[in-house]
Image 1 (cartoon, rainbow, N blue to C red):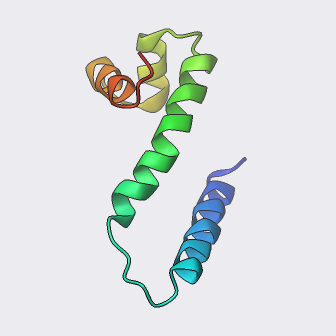
Image 2 (image 1 turned 135 degrees about the vertical axis):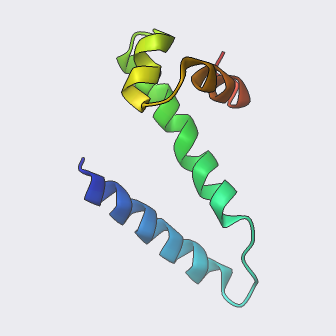
Length: 77
């Protein structure tokens, strides 16, 4: 899956979200999208890194402490 196909998937899902909302106001979209994407991304990267947090942090391009915080936030530790 390329970066473009991931962006396309997000775009299509947001289009559906807004269509389903109809005339209702939208709120907290940023948090909704980040939370929806972040947890499965962390799960997949941790699997790929064989649960090695240092390796996973390198793959994600983030600090290991930041990774630990995000894993805790998502109940993955």
